Structures are given as structure tokens and as C-alpha cells.
Image (cartoon, rainbow, N blue to C red; front, side, top):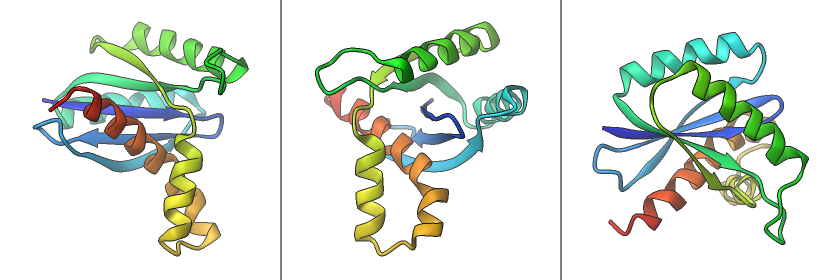
Length: 137
């Protein structure tokens, strides 16, 4: 069984998946955030194909630990997910994952046009790896 991570954004939702041993996170894809019905259809497809046991959703917190408007949007997104899927959902602090993903892509000499395509799924992988590392495996 695997863990699927979602990096929620206003335009795109990045998706990453753990290996079966829950040690390594791998970026999978990004899906447009709208329309929500299309995203949910793709999510359900991934959940059944990949044998997912937990959905991990990144919650952006301010640097002081408080929650801002973006975190409230994610809470609404999580509520919509809970109404749609039966798999457990857990939220996880995702401070600076997108900035870190951008930095990795720049260091890897990925062109600006291509970075837009990759940053969301890379941020989801960073989020998931942070969670996996916390499990102490």
C-alpha cells in the first residue's frame, strides 16, 4: 500500500506517490485544479490503480506557524475530498516546498517554461518525503 501526496494550488495540483515500503517519494504528475470534477475523476483513478492507503495534503502555513488565506482554501479542498473518497486524509505542513522545488529545478538547469510543468509535482514529492522521513523508517 502507498501514500499519495497532493500539493494544492489555485491552478494546478501536484501529485506524488510513495513506494510500497513508504521510504521514497516520487513525483507523478500535476492535474489542473479546475474543474474540480475532472480532478476528482483523475484522483479516483489513481487511488484504485496505485493501491493508496492514505492521502497526504499539504497545508501552507505562514512562517510563524499561523494559517493564512491559502490554508483556508486547502481546508475547503480537504473537506471536498473527504466528501468524495473513503481513504483516510491527513494534512501536513508544506512551508516552502514550492520554493524548494523551484530551487532544485533551477539547480538541475531546467528551463523556466519546463519548471512550471514540474514544480507542482516536485513540491508534492518534497512534501511526501518530509512525511515519510518523519515516520522514522
